[in-house]
Amino acid sequence: MIVSLLLLLLVIGTPIGIAFALIVMVNAESWNIDPFTLAALPYDTVNSFPLLAIPLYLLVGELMNRGGLVAQIISVCDIFLSKVRAPLGHIMIFASALMGAITGSSVATVAAIGSTVGSEMRKRGYPVGYVAALNAAAGLLGVLIPPSIPLILYGSIVGVSITKLFMASLIPGLLIIVVFCIIHLFLSRRVLKDGQEVRTEDTLPDIGAVRRPIQTVVHAAPALFLPVLVLGGIYSGIFTPTEAAAVAGVYAMLVTLISRKAGKGDMRGIFEKAVLATAAILVIIAFTSVFNRAMVLEQIPQGIADFTTAFTSNPMLFLLVVNIALILVGMFMETNAATLLMGPLLAPAAIRFGVDPVHFGVILVTNIEIGLLTPPLAANLYVAARTNNARLSAMMQYTWWFLGGTLLALMLITFIPQLTMWPNYFKAS
Image (cartoon, rainbow, N blue to C red):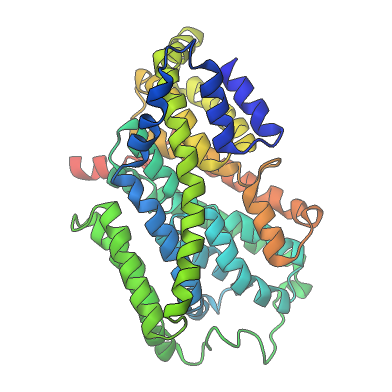
């Protein structure tokens, strides 16, 4: 009943943070929650060291955009993929993966890559609907490729190592990259005249020429070093994910200032954008913390676990049912809110079925990220449509292909745990 009312509020357009707050305030007495604690609990929740990574990674994304680091990454992708058929589509996919590996945000990835690669794809003969659909789909990599903001949230609220979650999501992220590249190879024969991109003298004027690969790589070295700094520092144990975000933020700021792509006066606008995006996320986290506390007091997670174990004793069937439920939730809820809501609700049941919480975290985030492509919420679709000046109707005929590929990858991730738990097998050997 509570979850149904929450979903109803979200469907009718109630802001996410307000929807959670209303549910809590209306039911505070029946949940035996002292209203005076409502001020302390949200603050205690957001006053968290792991959550500090969220504003820092969002700041890195803004700095990369303004500092020209995104264009540098694209120029390198263009060098290595120029001999592949329909290369710009592959460039969009790989550039989105690299952008996601730095910012952890799907929407930021869609906006940054769409505004740079998207315009060049249209020049080379791609239909605008296909460009926007590929842009929206490739943006999913911003959620799964580590560092990932939803994985940080899941690890914080469920009590799982964020570093382990990042390592577990590497192969699933690479799997989705491969799936998207295959789909693009297939669809490019349909959407391009004679299956080939139109090459003109003015294509990629700012992204670098393949004729100068060494100079382009050297020029892009500052951008290429950033994911090495972030991921290398995390996996080597030098940084925690939060510390890596801070180091990346300082590095991106220095590169931006030194390159003079943005001056000191521009920093205020960059910080304002990052702060506004952070505030929206943290408000959701603050109020979902009270909601999740109420769920625990009402023993909702235990009830779900009892119901599912009574419904079936088969872990495979349990995971199948959970996948369907999470996809439906992702259609109506924002990614971070869905992660914060469904993580603590379903993780106890998954553990009871013998599913490792790290594996389940990747399953959950992969499911919920699909909601970024499925209306009515579908944030990636709307951002890609606006960035590429495309109609949703023109996008959907291509979006279904990428959505189907993501669902196939989801099934593999769900039922082949070795794809996510590979660090354990590696240690065992």
